[in-house]
View 1: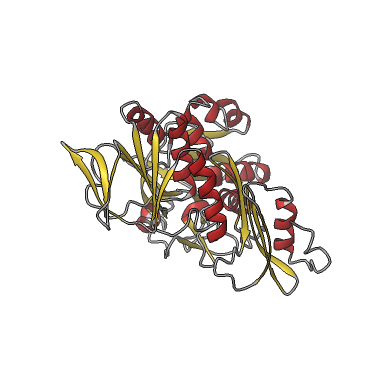
View 2 (view 1 turned 90 degrees about the horizontal axis):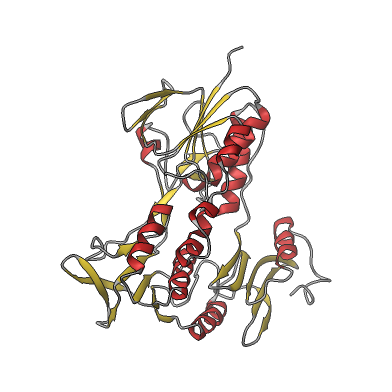
Length: 392
């Protein structure tokens, strides 16, 4: 029986976990990971620490050369894949090389969404997604005293904190009336904002950026819809991400928000699977590390002939935002429609969302003790009637 050839496009957490999973099932098959980046698999969530100077580039790398050798996985970096012939099962690289496969995993991830703001294409405007973005931000930081962050999402706030540690004055402009709108309700957002203001951040909430101003093609500030101007020699845009669908579309796979996959993470193409930020499962594109990891595991097992099912991942995040512990899981009930238990002080805000004596969501700011148990109760749909007054 001939050995199978497995190709994986993308070396983030989904692609790398899948490769590991394939190798466990199939000790003999040939596994190649193709990545357009210039580093092996690294911790993207630690890019802010790299910007702040807390970790070196070497320390970001999660899987060293030795790991790939031990797993007998070929990693090809600086390799951009531009074509997919799903019918004849082969990929084409930017340089024109043809790469045949028996099984393929698309783990192409996502890219930063850049809203159509006038002046967004000037020098000094960045998004943070990859190591090359972090390097560029670091190079510009040396020439900038004031930084503007468009978007109060997690990656943006973390990048802002890294630059604050380098002595920069940081202003955050957020379209929503609160910070981390996906993870926090208005009280949780307000508590986080107060703690960050004490650290020196300033905020413009419910604000829209009309123009990024500049001279000689170099950004020097922004003008808000209301007419206010904010100065800054550097603008970081953190307005969400969009799946990288070019390759899936080139292969005529069925896509909507992401590449459509079933519970086995198979796409509409024979022998072609998708996992991570690029995959849309039951109408959801998760975009979170735990989901990418779980999907990589399931996809890898199935690619190598296993029978694994993916049933979704509870949206759960444990974060450190500017050194402040923040955690959120399930339905955060920002509209206040459900029963809830709340604990609140100057430094801490905690909320447990309850429906029919079951925990359905949770928010914690400033103290995340007990969060893992509560997350488990949410996933397991356990009855917490006797516990609900003591869980927080």
